[in-house]
Length: 242
Image (cartoon, rainbow, N blue to C red; front, side, top):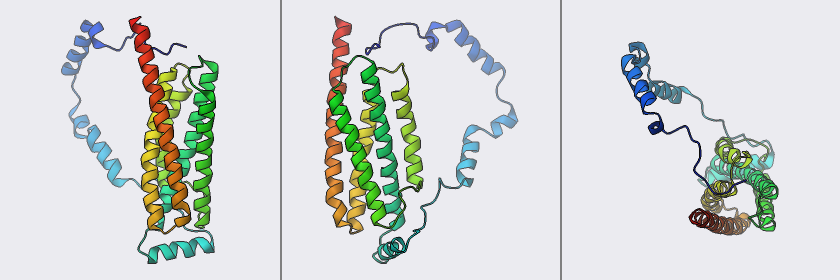
């Protein structure tokens, strides 16, 4: 596997095929979209779907007496328990995705040139697993069901799919995979900040400190991954010059 991008065959630039590109433009001008097609353009269709579609889902109602009491107390205090449960579900889904992302990167590093510290990657992977357990326990402590797929959890899972595709593509290089991991860590750190605020407002003091520690751990991940990406990019540039 080659980590550095090299010049090679690429058929996507239109400048390589000026005649065919001009013919395509002329064809579009000669056969423009029909009037009925233009009346129902992409924007109109998307707007119709957006305005008439249902949301991604709903936050499940508490299925236990403790959950119902907890939700009632939060509502009386002026908080929105459904928002907190939704964001906790999102964190749970993202931490699960983080485990899989690191598993994929570890597999790639073991199969390709070992340019990264496997022990550090495994520690980061285990950290993600601990954070998953932490969020799961928090949901359970509120009487919620950690197995429920909340709307934000659904959205988070879809967002992580693109990153997972990068990691699982056998053609992707180690630097490309590290950059995908960095995207995940940046999003993770920002999401923990919001979650800490929500937990604090909900009066879950037992979890505020634990979530803050998780946030510091994610910040450490982000700094290490960022440094690795900088080093890998610089090394590839030096190889290209050399």
